[in-house]
Amino acid sequence: MNRRTKERLVFLGFRLCAMIVVLALVVLVGYIVINGLPKLSLDFLTQFPKDRNTMGGIFPAILGTLYLMGLVVLFAVPLGILTAIYIVEYQSGSIWKSALRMIIHNLAGVPSIVYGLLGLALFVGMMNLGAGLLASALTLSLLVLPMVIAASREAIIAVPPSVREASLALGATKWQTIRHHVLPYSISGILTGVILSLSRAAGETAPILFTGVVFFKTFLPDSLTDTFMALPYHLYALATQTTEITRPNQYGTALVLLLLVIGMNLFAIILRKRYRDKYKW
Amino acid sequence: MASKVSIRKATTRRRLKEKLVWLGLFGVSDISALVLFIVFGFLLVNAIPAFTRSLDFLFPVHPDGVINLSDFLFGTNWDPTNPVSPAYGIVPMFVATLLVSLVAACIAIPIGIGCTIYVAEIASPRVRSILKPAIEVLAGIPSVVYGFFALVILSQWLAGIFDPPNKLNLFNGGVMLAVMMIPIMVSLSEDAINSVPRHLREASYALGLTRWETIRGVVVPAAASGIVAAIVLSIGRAIGETMTVLMATGNARALTFNLFQSGQTMTAVIASETGEVPFYSLHYDALFAIGVVLFVLTFVINLLADWIMHRVREEYH
Image (cartoon, rainbow over all chains, first blue to last red; front, side, top):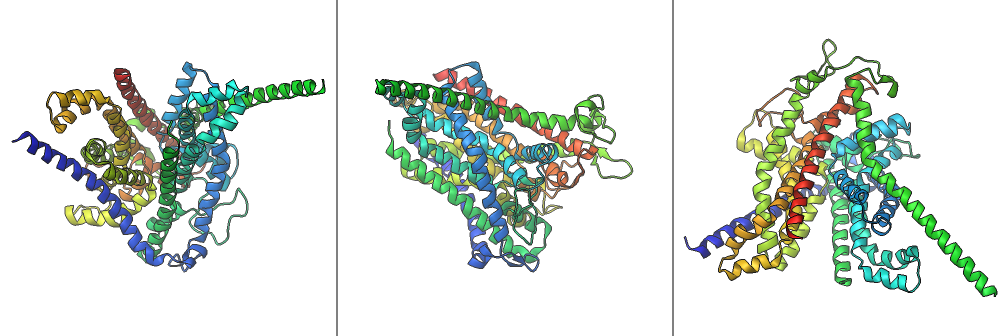
């Protein structure tokens, strides 16, 4: 066989692989959109479930997920960003530094269900926070903390040393330099990482399985230790614990969750592209 | 005079603020480094009482007996709720985890590598600017949505093709896991291919090799450690994945080597049983012991990938 022909054939194979991947995305999202769209309405988003989840909406599940995200922002984001600042700006190169990086890297690979066990043992069992919003949000915070740190770290490292040196040369202290020069330049990168981490927190089911998420509730949670409904768990429970009658609601829930998570992902991707175009060092 | 004093005051305040910021940040960095130790520590603290009473002074009261460690590691029966003779063997779920990950790897590795090479070396910038976000979005889809798809749609399709004894089976979970693994694999191995220095490719073209010959003979070998690390890492993710396999594989406890029968992976056992066990019962301890096995397994895989990746860095920088 001719070398060129061979090349063309092999490249065709690679293109096919890429097409399979895109096809998988299109089929998966397409099925859920097509089947979920008829269910999507204002009522579905703003009402409580009715008639054994065949009618009504998923309002409490949406609200529960939003509560969780809000709490995760509160716990994980400041801690993650401050840690990243410390690692990059204050810690001089040492074994500890590379050890810390390795730990953060490895934390990302811990299975999410293991975080669920941890949440149960630590927040519900030992700290007696009760199975509820707070315990779940803390568990999710532990899960996304390494992601926030890694993303913030990369964004801060990307600011060139010359910016810092210029500020220091003008007599600014280290913290002033960070506050007025490093952070403003890296904030959009940090924000991208934060949004991606939040979308992960919003979509995770396994870590909150044992810390207070419930299938059905007739009232909204009114304290941090109250049990709550959440979108991903609602989808899981609907799909595995009810019959085919609730299928339209299953598709509807899946679509809402997908829109929320993919929307955040796309927003982060666009944000990243914009700041990459804006700052070219 | 007055201005001098106020300048000095301001300087002192500034210095003090610097110190405070440093102190605060130092404390913070320690907290997050501790997370990993907390995770592992808590798993151990809750798992050890399953096997021995000798460390009881460390732990809350665990009223039940203990499991023989070898019964746990080599037992082929998991039946903790049996009132007569409860069994705590981890082998069935371990086998299920391996089978599911094996199916996923066999499908994901060829497609993932092909897709990576296409994205990194062949695609035009325009195609790439569509492909890369698509792959990222695929990686961002929640696992419960994958699980739902596998449960409701994929299982129907596969049942139509293979006519399996159980509609929800290990193969079904493996195929869905493969789709989840590919984006992780592609984004990691693409980094490896991109970090191959340009001059290596140019030298190869200068010698008259075609683009495919350059990819096969120069680029892929040079990025090999990175690609292998990406594969290893994505297998680690497949082993730790919970919701997809929980919903897709049918959750049968019996030991099986048949891909088309229902099975239950380690993650699925933890997910489906932990919510119902009383605190500090033997069943509870045993579930944490599974968690330890899972943690160690994925941790070792991560370390392995880290180690492989580190070697490629040293080769070119």
